Image (cartoon, rainbow, N blue to C red):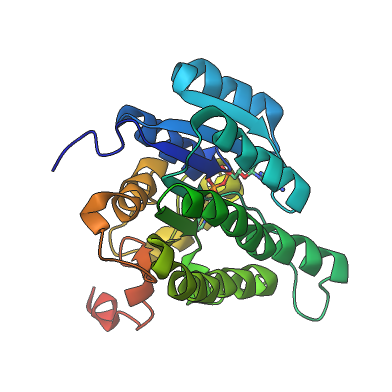
Length: 259
Ligand SMILES: NC(=O)c1ccc[n+]([C@@H]2O[C@H](COP(=O)([O-])OP(=O)(O)OC[C@H]3O[C@@H](n4cnc5c(N)ncnc54)[C@H](O)[C@@H]3O)[C@@H](O)[C@H]2O)c1
């Protein structure tokens, strides 16, 4: 397998200032791509630009705002005149019990993790269509399949991302655009710092993960790049779980009773 699968290619990464998006941007640049990184965090984008050099073009944009998304992806059109790969990783959530959750918190989460994926895919696909095709990877979550206490808007939104990915894959195949989703389990990023930084909570998560550790952002970036690369040229509309086996572990392990 070539280690420079993205030589000379143009990519967009949302949520590029931190965590999984930052790891995807770094991996793409290591394989020869030029990357426009969209994020709402201007200071974080500045840090990534300092680390990654001229191949990283920061573009401050709120992915819930269509005009901002269009302008951010427009930077790729201006700089490169094309788009080969796009990764929609921006995200966060507000949590709360179904009986207590505020309408504003529901709307915030659904807009950020679900509507944004539609808006970004729309404008990424338009540019890809005009330049001969491409591949889009949407970062969903294991929560698309496994509900989380207090996480109804997040799980609902991430499940919506999976179906949106399949619908977009169906529509865009004729334009030589593939669309796939990655469903990470627990990934050690600032998003989950409250879990990773509080040992009792961290241990409760790790007990559920057969591989016994959280993923690094790079362990999510690698399968994401695979799906956008020519190595996955016949794969579209899939939802790939990358969770260290977490999805498999719901059955109680009675062997523990035997000591
Ligand atoms: N960390 C995990 O355990 C985990 C697990 C499953 C899925 N995910 C998903 O992976 C994606 C990346 O999360 P992460 O863990 O790297 O978190 P992170 O907090 O490290 O990075 C998320 C980035 O999204 C940006 N962002 C937030 N709101 C935005 C907006 N309105 N417009 C533009 N950018 C915005 C943030 O500024 C940040 O840079 C998210 O969609 C998240 O839901 C994370």
